[in-house]
Image (cartoon, rainbow, N blue to C red; front, side, top):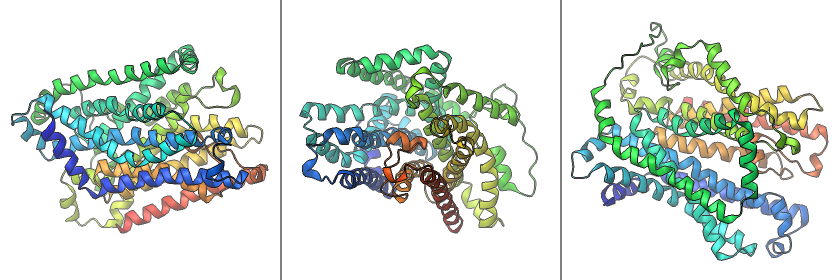
Length: 498
């Protein structure tokens, strides 16, 4: 029933070079984690493969297995929304869905085919890391049924996420706006729900830690069932939504009028005509209102709780540290690619605008927009760094510098891929490279540095014995933003010459 759309999408993806590069990049990230862990074991205790069975506790306490699995799961969570949104938006831009609706296929077969194709693409990309994960569990003498359960549970979240992404892609016209809603929608709902009802957050985490395997499996099944309403809504709203988008029905609400175009058209277009905010009422708000809204929301979600006695960040804080840089990546990865999707890139190349003018005006429009994301991520970074550097009294400058460099590097990497790839592929490559960048920077700082996946995402590092001195920690803290600054500047130069 779903065979025509499913086979067409899967075969088309397997022929794309960017899809093969994403698969290679995923393999590289997993191998970097694994080789880094093996080298750290050898340097700390002089151990190799034969001694893994005797030192299982040492490996687990070091966070190695958790980091390896976190890389695998993070790749699935990042790839699934972009793959689902990208294929639907490309079909809408190329008028493929219109042809499918005029065929004998109904909405169930069309949406179901795209949904299954997304799952198949995720499995194809992440399947090379499965043998390595299986080998690790075999070295730990894990039962075979638990290995199979781990692998299945790692792919299970892709099913409801793909359904949610398809529902959003059907209702939006731009790829960047759809990807932002797919990522930030669940994160905002999760964060705001627990920020309003703080006691429920503590109760939820306590019950989750006390649950056995049976109830965790039930929770995964319930999470899977949450995707069924999204899939039903996508099937139901496919024809009506596409018809309304083609008719371009104007709403009766008041419109926001931008200022007149001056002698810098690219700056005006990126500042006022791009979908930096999905809701037009945010554009009507003054700048201080938007900044205050973001800061209040992140401060409420990143506030300290009684469970922070050991300095461990809450799940909401880590989500903020992931979601806002990822949103900046998507927005910057859609600058040039949106021009190609809207068929305005070729006429733009025929004008008198030079390459340096386009890059300069685009960056001047993008960087002020990222200032809002910078202020949004700052409270979470400040709270995390204050747990470690409160005694030294330097957590505020470090947090500010780290957040600013994160945003600048995100803009540079995203803009570079936007000049060369479509929006969906540019977002995928940029997000994966961004995660790999953290791992590579940790490796460049020295093999004595040991970081868990939480430390990589939240800039909290556990240093080796040789770096225990305050001076060594401060040098490393200054070195890491410096490396990101050099890399981001290089990406800007590559984007200019591309």
